[in-house]
Image: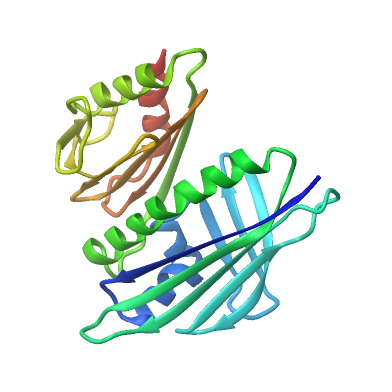
Length: 245
């Protein structure tokens, strides 16, 4: 049985409406702060897609008003499930913009757990968007994805392994200094900008490094703005797999 849901979030961003539009309504812009590799056809009725770890989710652009409103909706599945995203942009004084996000649709049988995960995730994603606009304005990030199963390890053990891999104390708090050295890549030195029960985000000079752990799996969604992006996905996959071995 499906269950309707709606999540609404609002945030003030340190950017103009045009800069926010580029970040939320273009493929390269979405690549720079959200998940996966994204494509957007710049018109109402156009195609949009997100590919993450070999899984491709396609949608249709249902609203395209540059600088004001952007929306997409996936097709309705056989069981009735679908996802819809709406972004509403409002310019404010001194170069800031208010962004309102409405995520709605129909979820399946395990709707409560899925809804809770989506609800917890949006504040983190909007924080990443703010970090991108504040520290890497006008630049396009190369998305890096990695995933590893944590098996039967308890969440506390997985969290501790991530902290060790990033040379962080436990508990991890915003402001901590992180260091990591994936094989074949320059060292990553940065500052923790977000830490909760499921996420750690590190901002370095060359990118935003995001780590998400939930029961049984750890995901990484990095956004790299420096020159050393070739081989980065394979290197971070090796780093993560070795960390959880």
